[in-house]
Amino acid sequence: MLEKKMITTEEEKKKKKIKIGYRKWSPLSVKFLNFVKNILDPEFPRTLIFLKVVSLEGIWIKNFKNYPFSVFGISIIPTIDRCSMSSLIGIFIENVLFQKPTQQKVDFFLPKNWNWKFSFGIPKFSHFKSEQYTKQLNDKERISAAFENRGVRTTINKCYNNNLL
Image (cartoon, rainbow, N blue to C red):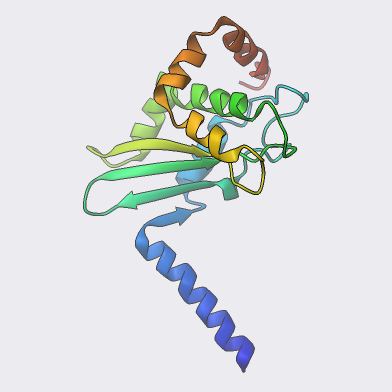
């Protein structure tokens, strides 16, 4: 009897989260995962999805009902807790998502006249500098400066798996 009550309270909590506006595992989450599926890890010759750096569980969407605005959150979980390439992996993902063809596909799936933005994060349990890297990944000026850096640009080009694109 007690187990049933615990299950119903957990189910109620999940329903409340959905009512607030958080949606997990939506069709858009799958689309975003498809956008980044061909990015290789800079240290290992495997894709980010194979290494579980980016997964479907780490993509969330929050819709605001009062204002037509959506936030797409992507959690990046490094392979080790002292990974030096965590911010670079976030830059790879941002590079893919900010390209014009990707933005046009995102606009196609959203209702007209809706605004949207991306929010990147590294969970606290997965890296010892997670707060610093999350702050860097969500700073537009730092990201645009990284895109202008020739070394970062060549690394980005190496990490695209051109055979699968």
